[in-house]
Image (cartoon, rainbow, N blue to C red; front, side):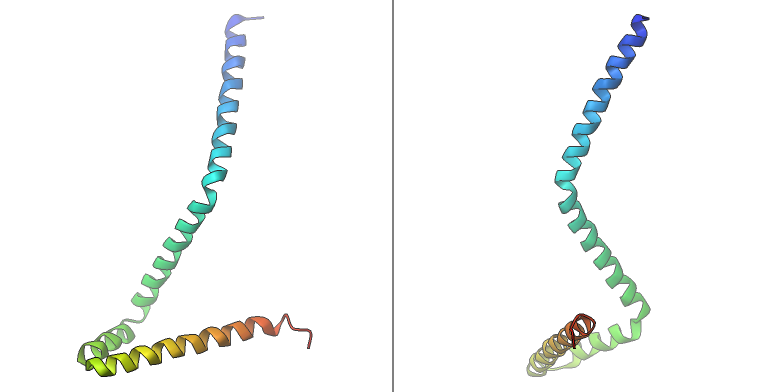
Length: 101
């Protein structure tokens, strides 16, 4: 057989083994990359939301600037409470299809 062809086949085998090793190494990093990409997607979605609702964002910013510190605490508590209610409501909505009754 042609020596050059044998050399090419050997080199091909080494390259395939190296590719397999790289694929295996990539699977080790996949969860970290997935988390980073998920975070980037959430940041991008937040930026897009802010672009779609500039009046609301400006109103909240004005409210925070104009409110007194005692009112800010009240506003913060109300916002946290509202978020808890919203998450609870969404959790119940997700359970609606899964409950047997």
